[in-house]
Image (cartoon, rainbow, N blue to C red; front, side, top):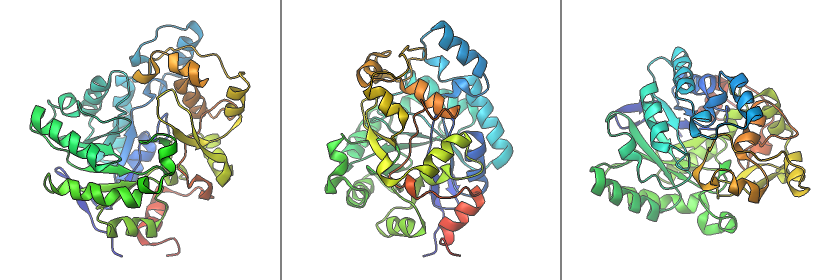
Length: 366
C-alpha cells in the first residue's frame, strides 16, 4: 500500500505517521525535530520541562522540598528552548506539542506551547473540554484531542461547538495497548470491545457527523503492516510512540533505551499511577520497592497533575510519578519509571529516525 499525505488544519503531514508525545524527556527537541524533518509529525512533550536545562535548580528544589508549584515541572522558558532547538532541525515543517489534560495549569502550558511555536496541540489523559479556551488567541494552531470512544468525541464536539463554535482539526483514537496512561480502567483495557480495531470505526463514523475531521489511530501500532491495516479501516494515519524510543535521536537516556531493549513480553505491565489511570510500562525494581514499602520518600515539589492532589494519591499508590519519571530521564534504573507500549519487548535495535521512518513507509525488509 502506498501511504498518502494528509492535512490537519492548514498543515500538511507528508507521511502519515505522528510520533507520540513522551515525557519526561523522551520526546523533546532532538526526536521531535528529527521526525518532522523526515516528513512525519514530530511531537514535543510538555511534561517535565523544568529539568530540561536546569537540573541543578531541580535538584535544589528536591533537597529544599520547596516550593510545590506547577511551574517547577512545566517551565515556559525550557519549552521555548526545546522548540527553538527543534526548529533548528526541522525548519518550518509542522511541529506539535502534547499537553496532558490532567496537567496542573493546563491552559497556561498550552499557551506557552503556542507562544513557543507549536503548530498543533495534542491532548489526552482526560477529555479536553477547555482546549479551545486555552488556544483562543492562536487561531492557526490546530487542535487534536485524544479519545477512546465515539461517545467521547460526540460530547467533545457538542461542547466545543456550543462554547467556542470550534471543532477539532483532527482526532486521535487510542486503544489500550499504548504506553503510558490509558483511557480505560484496568479491567476495561483487556476487553475485546475496547481494542483499537473495534473502537476505531465508530469514531470514524462519528467524525463524519462533524465534517471532514481526519482520524488517526494509536496504541500498539508497530510496523508497516499495522499502519496499512489502520488506513484500510479508515484512519488517515497513525500515532506511534514506543518504536521511536529505539532511535539514535530519541532524547531518552541510553539507560532508558536499554531498559526497553532488555524487556521481555512478560515484563510489560499495566501499573498503578497517581494520575488515576492505569499506565503501561516495564516492571522494574521500582515496583518491588513499592510493594516492600522501600520506595523513595514522597514529597510533592511540582504539583504536576491535578488528580494526585499535591501528593495524596502518590502516597496511596506508593510513588511520586514526577520524581520517578525524572529518575528515568537521568537513567536511574533502580528507581526510574519506564513507560512503553505493549510491543516494547519487540524493540531490538537502535537506528536513526530516518531509517525507522523508511522502514515504516516501505516495509521492514526493503
